[in-house]
Every structure is written in C-alpha cells, then in structure tokens.
Length: 300
Image 1: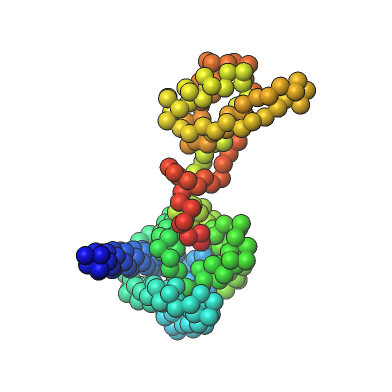
Image 2: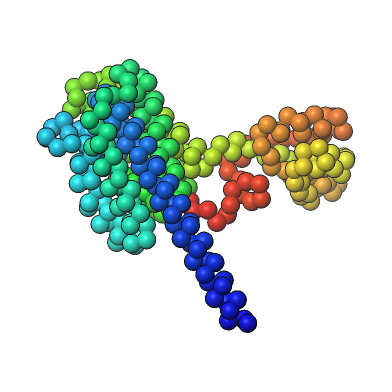
C-alpha cells in the first residue's frame, strides 16, 4: 500500500514539474517576442543602441551587412559557452532558447515599419518593453544571453548590487559608442533615456516596488497602540525590549513593517492613543516573509 502511494506521489510530482517547465518556456517565448518588438519596432529603426549585446548588434549592423538579429546570436555564442562553464547546462539551455528566439523574432519583425518615428516615444517604449521582458525571463530562472549572463556572474560576486544598476553602468559605454558611430549626439542621448527607463523598470519587475515603511514607536501605552495596529490594519507588531539611557526605565519598543500606504493610518493611531509618543519612520527597501517576498525566490 505504501509503495503504491509512493508511485502516485512520484507521478503527481512529475506532472507538476512538467507543468512548471511548460509554463516557464511559455513565459520565455512571450517575453522573447516582446523583447524583439522593443528592438525591431522602436530602438533599432530609430538608430538607438541602448546598451548590452543588443546595442552592440545594432551598431555592428550599421557597419557590416549583417542583420541585428543575426548579430545578437553571433555575439552570444562565446558568452553562452562561458555560461555553460560558470552556471552549468540547466541555466544555459533556457538561455540558448531565449537568445535564439530573440534573434529570430528580431529578424522577422525587422521587415515591418517602425511603430513610431518619434524618437522620445521610441526610447521610452523600447526601454520599457526590453526591460520588462528581461525581468520576466530572469524570474523564471533563465537569461536572454549577453549582458544578462555577465550581470548574473557579477551579482554572484557582488550580491548587494541590484541588477538594473549594473546594467545601467555597463550600458553607458555602449551608448557613448553609439553616438560616435552614428555621429548623432541626439540618438545617443535618446538611447541613454531608454537605458535609464529600462534600469528602473527592470528593478521594479525583479524586486517589486516595496516602498514599505519600518516604524519604531516608543510610548507609555505600547499595548494599546499595538492592539489598534493589529485590529485596524491587520499588520504584525513586534515588541523590542529597550531601556531609557537617562531614566533607566524599561520600555517596550514597537516595531512594525507595512506598505507605504498604511503608514499614515499608524500615525493617526499613535497620535490618538498617545500624542507624546516618540516615533521613527524609515523606508524599507525590501521585505521578506509572509505577505511580502519569499525567502526562497532566486535573487538575480
């Protein structure tokens, strides 16, 4: 009987794994197409090279008679070989899939007219589409090749640096180079706008906009304040044992983290219960735990 249950459990787990794998590659396919849209319909036809391997590919396509999509694939070959050595075949297989699709979609869409010739709109749309696509591909444990793999390797060494920031600095050199090649400072500046937008969007997709608040409240009525916060906001509260340096009296310090929008309500509660309270409100960049991010999600 126990053996039968074990077989049923294994079958169930296999089905779940196959479903998750299918979902992963559907997301990669959709994101790869979206990325190609950003390149072929917005940045490339407006002579913008917004950083990364794609930016280099756009520059090279102007210097040699090879399409941008083909250059994307050619430039990624040595990087993907590095990825196999550094991260193994697991990550690289999905990255090869994403890179190949991006190359194919970029070449297919290149035959279409530009979605807009308004350079500012193209910079904004291209930045948003490419960054959102990279972010979703990262979230399923893959990359789009190129700088994604290099950035992932850098974050293994320097994990406190956010992905969007690393992209921003690495892309700056390519944007500068594009201005020299295209001999158009305006194109370079618009490409820089696209890079800046992409950096912001990428961090939002990967890390979310926590915009949380961390509060410390020192009051003579900590139990009443904590009870109101728990009842009115359904937000967890923690007591920290403290002691006044001057008075020597023991105190219960309330600590709680919450969404930015809930903080004003706490201020009202504290003001109503004990207007003489001492309260510190600070920003929390990221929060892990129930109601927020998972500890086990992969950090990119």
